Length: 115
Image (cartoon, rainbow, N blue to C red):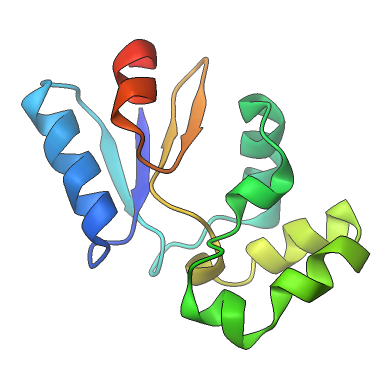
């Protein structure tokens, strides 16, 4: 299982502690230093069944600075994927990737049922 997170993010820290408390083994990946590629994000997006917008860190500083709330609707799916692949700070986290699932953001009840 892959756990993609940002170490300074409090939600990510909470998610990591939750995984450790449940004795769930995982491989860590810092989204800031090892940004997911557009191809990886596309694979995760398709596997997750979620809308692509769910992969954007809408509360992040970079998202707001780039005024993406207004721009995303006019962008193609490919353009959005390429944008997400450019900077890990645009990507919502944490992300958990298993053989069957891709979970975006930490929702304890959802994780409880799927991990």
